[in-house]
Image 1 (cartoon, rainbow, N blue to C red):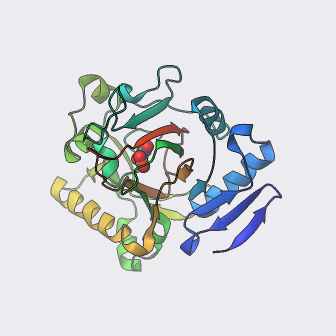
Image 2: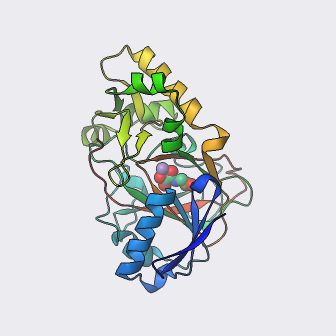
Image 3: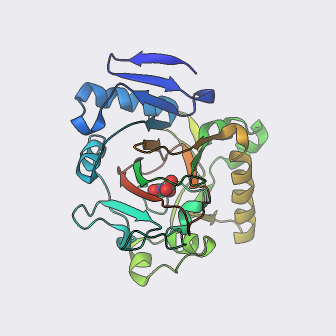
Length: 287
Ligand code: OGA
Ligand code: MN
């Protein structure tokens, strides 16, 4: 665990392999200075996943913090949008009376994915807080797609160059066994293709751009592309590439979707209470 003070603003404590860092010395609800935004930006570029402990965000201050990093985007699944802040989403396993329903409502989060890779300009950063934290299970796991790429043998990495994966919300819903995509959602998010190996615009690092929304490889037999994607995901989600976040009350998580994939670990949705609230910063077209 390295500890360093960045730009006099925040404390950054890196996790194993520099993947993930805990950020201290800042109160996100109080409003963050321009210098602090720069320092947080530098930290996320360096560590890909940031953990802020003991924060007291509500929906409004969460929204305001997220907006410091760029325009936010809504989700095509309108059922999760907050009424008063439609660019934010909330989902959890509680009914209107606060009782566990027995069902984790967004099955697609239980499988490895990177946020909104099924649109032409997928998400940049996701900022998540959890008003109800499961006591057992329900961790959020992240895999480092830069290290996963860099650990491929050279010949294999070479074979991936120039390939494009098709990302498809409709197919992604089918694979994660959720309610089928609606006609409106399919119209809003037709399949798109992105480079299988993308270059991070801030670091120049190459990363694997995969996950459940990736359906197959453009120009290849579907089955062949599916097998390649599954194989790359198996490689990329080995223990040595993972940071597993065990939630505490008042945590805020922020991650870079360009170089990570993530998923929620199972929990007992009939007994535990787990609710998250998220804001997503719009990204650019992957190259
Ligand atoms: C998300 C997501 C993870 C979680 O909000 O994009 O995948 O831990 N959530 O709920
Ligand atoms: Mn997600």
